Figure 1 (cartoon, helix red, strand yellow):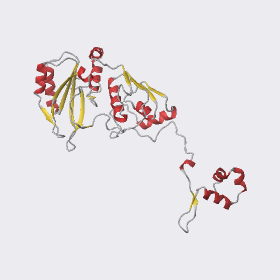
Figure 2 (cartoon, rainbow, N blue to C red; figure 1 turned 45 degrees about the vertical axis):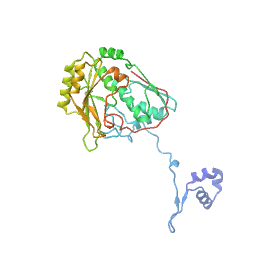
Figure 3 (cartoon, rainbow, N blue to C red; figure 1 turned 90 degrees about the vertical axis):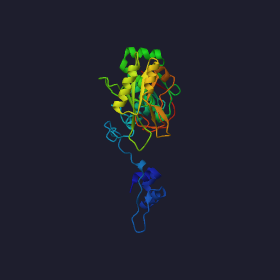
Figure 4 (tube, helix red, strand yellow; figure 1 turned 180 degrees about the vertical axis):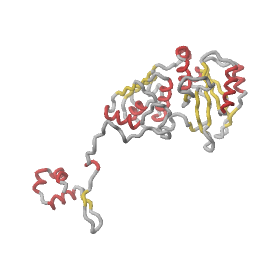
Length: 318
């Protein structure tokens, strides 16, 4: 007989005065007795909220690391599971609080904060991280830079881009690659020049393997030689498309050399696209993007779970 439950229903004093039958009647009236088929013995019904359970400990074993094939995996080396950051924020903050992540990486803490209706501020030293977070916020919450949050410290003009290129050529390359939606650096660390600075995968035919777009970024003076060499890289690598990003305006011979690379015809609608496309940093900043088929991206955050949440005050900072 669950005496404690009876006391909760009728009070401790009354429970002490009741007979066994009266207690059973009280339990039945409150919905705590199950009557099985004829001939079986009645039993108590236990509800989940009646069991206090065990407090969560500081050693977490029920949230597994992100596997190689996990849906939320972004390819960032230090990425943490979203569920882990959600648990930490739920235990340490309330809705409306401000969450600061000064080393935000691929932005899992920021995403968790936004999902849980916290305000947030993220800081990272690399332009790769900031670009990845922007795409993640766009795909998961439909947040737009300038409308829903601000980015502090990124180049916004060609002059800013030139200053970044003079300061750190590697970071300029990563920033420029970040201007191309869902593109990623080809090499995470500095190394020998392979003629490839960035890469993007896409599918426009589910019956074929993913197709590659190679990206090259130039911050200095460029000529037809760079375009000719990039054409050779596309052929050597068997890439479908090539995107060439430059700070300087391309010359007429450069454009002619790019045209010699021919066209790619997408099986999705039969659209013809130049195989080698050139854009200046100024064009990309103005929203004049490279041309791709209407397609399903494989590289980037389009595979991450899309989440609806209220828009709070937010800021990213370099």
